[in-house]
Image (cartoon, rainbow, N blue to C red; front, side, top):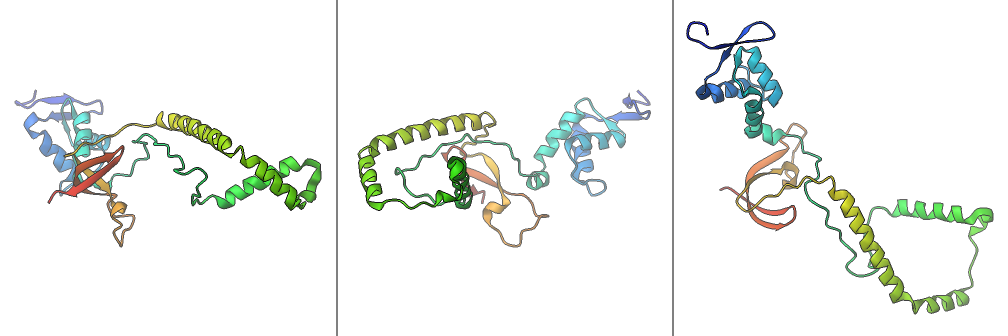
Length: 224
């Protein structure tokens, strides 16, 4: 206590002026985004900057982190997180053996080719051997009688595989759910705005959750 003012001794040497509770928000604002020294630093950097400016209070580190989380500009410029927030919903082909358009045709062809090479062994370059069309057609007709059984067996295997895949995926998920009425930010690129560059905000909003459609899917509305 010096002349009626409370100070805290610092490990770096100078005394730190203890800030009254009613003045905490003002100090956080001036250092974080004020006209003189504010440049929207992170929570820990903000707390250290305040101590270097000669101020202190017992919950400084936590208050600085919470203040940064509430800062509108910091939220909109925040890097898009890579954390998984919604559990996987496995989707099977709606119609057995229906055609799906995918971008893996070239890779799959290469995979098939490698499989053929491994099974040819001594045949080498003789893999392009013609087949007897009549004999082949007869064999196909014989196998068609077992088509339903084989298709059902494949579907069961696919269901089992997708269940195991979802189980592995969901172990890394940190669920983040919203309810109707919550205020949220939307990724800026979701609006498909033109003339967007790397210096633009990553997020836009806020929006209000109007309705929950499904896991991780929401209908949003503007506040106005």
